[in-house]
Length: 276
Image (cartoon, rainbow, N blue to C red):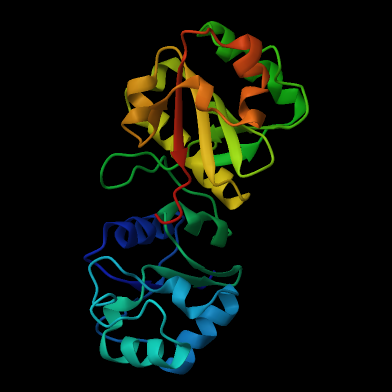
């Protein structure tokens, strides 16, 4: 498989992406785009193949984006700016026969590779890379058993309007489960559970953040959850405690709010993260 990565070796996400490619046994063509920037035509071809506007692959943080007043600039002005400041290109962009993507977070690159990972992969900061698989009806019993073991509610798993996931490491081994309930801009993050022997090893954070990305990709704008024992954990991920009376009607009407979770459970919310 031929793979090209537009790489910035100073960027941790770019380094993790390159390492994931190599962990699949692939040695890619590495283009350090700050040294060898793509031409205008090449850059426009990349965004055409990604089916996104040029603006969506530009980076604001740590670049002259604001100093150059690019917020409302047109495509020609953006291209002029990139010509002068290649650091405006976000990283890494990966090209394979399966497509072209801006790989943020780094695990997005797994969607572009036709070979499995050769080992369990951890990012440079120690966070595991996980993959999410939609859970079919046959997998709900396994999920329910793990929830029951932790005294977490599971009675409504099979009801409509819920989507549950099995989370695996890069070798396909089960790490945990979690789900999203609802269809509108407000969604309930629920039933997050990690295998007991993997707790304390950052798998819970990886599961929660992967769920957030799944919800965001499906159009969610705000996430809600109830927890009796993990409020601090979720607060560390950016969730904020709220009064349960503030919950939107569609969230307050869920079984989790109405009957399954104790009235003492903490209620937390978070706006969906759009950049990684």
